Amino acid sequence: RLPMVVRGMRWLARMPRPAIRGQLLCAVAAALIAAGVVEELPPAAAAIPLLFAAYLAFEYPPPGAGVGKPAPPLSNTKLIGEDTVQLDNKGTLLPGHVYIVVFWRSSKQCIRALPRLERLWRRCAAVLPKKASMLLVADRGETEAGLAAFLKRWEGQITMSLLLDQAGEAEVEYIHRFDVLSLPHAFVVSPQGTIVWHGNANLKGLIQATEALLSRCVAETDSGTKASAEKISSAGDSAANGQKPTESKKKK
Image (cartoon, rainbow, N blue to C red; front, side, top):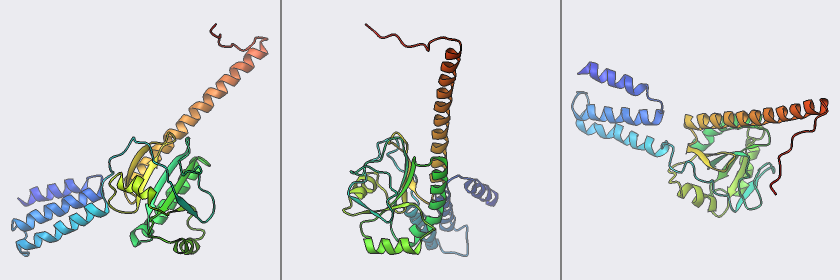
């Protein structure tokens, strides 16, 4: 029986999502304790790993439903700090831009995620300059003064745009609509304005989804640039040979 348990634990350890892996490990541990395999612990102790599994499910939920849907506007949000945000006057996300919208509050878990998010943001800015934005949307329970003090403490370390969800409209459109359970929670939005991924900002899936989107955008840009270069080259060759560039015939 023990070799079977060891093989099962090794299989769980190879699973890609750490949170799900942890929950399954907790479930296995609870089952072993309840079955009396762990003689040193009473069956009632099985509740301990189950409680930890519940904690993992709440703090690190898997990516949620809503992928493929249009990203709602960030209405009635107020910019805190420098004006670097790329939104229109109504808070609508601009077409042709990549956005990572992170719902956030000044809790320990959210603050721990900041260095990782900043590294990801700088990667986006380097790959797609002026065509990418990472927006920290602070919970409406935060205050302008508190957020301003936060920016001052993190000056030089955080270059992401910080918005305050003043009336909770963005919370309704994102957090409530897509059944978000915990913060920080990130939404990755494509240049077409659709959500391509969303989940806890501490999950590896955020980096993977962002990298995949950046690669696709770069490939599309390179393809368009190559096509334009070929068109210009063709026009230049025609001019050199004394030929007029071909024009499409208009329908009568």
